Structures are given as C-alpha cells and as structure tokens.
Image 1 (cartoon, rainbow, N blue to C red):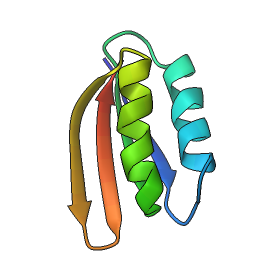
Image 2 (cartoon, one colour; image 1 turned 90 degrees about the vertical axis):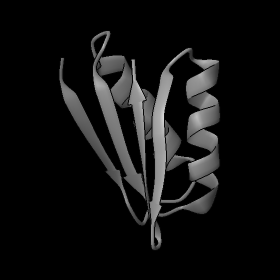
Image 3 (cartoon, rainbow, N blue to C red; image 1 turned 45 degrees about the vertical axis):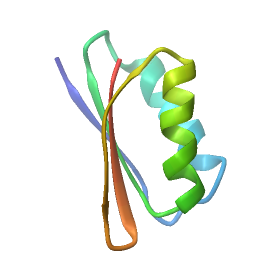
Image 4 (spheres, helix red, strand yellow; image 1 turned 180 degrees about the horizontal axis):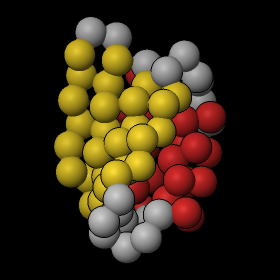
Length: 73
C-alpha cells in the first residue's frame, strides 16, 4: 500500500479536483492519497467527488489556511 501526496497549495478550482482525479487513476486499490491545499471550495468539493467515485474519505483536517484531506482508493 502506497501513500501518495498531492500538493495543490495556492491552486484554485478546478485544479485540486483535477489533480486528485489524476492521482486516483494512478493509485492502486488500498492506496492512501493525502491532498494538501488552501482553496476553501476544494475542501468541500474533494470529499463530495470522492463519495461520488466510491473513494473512502479518511479525514479532513484544517490547520490555519491549509487543509489536508486523506482518501483511500
């Protein structure tokens, strides 16, 4: 099982969502994606997109302006 980091700090929609989808396509079943970003709308959109793609949302954390979303394929 791999852990894949996707750093989209400073990027706005739709870039974080696009990068998440790209990383998911490369990920193997069971891999964990850690997406780090700063765009507030993406913090809501990424978990919704993950649900739609049947990807497990392990957690969403906020620290200052940055958020970290962990997903498992």
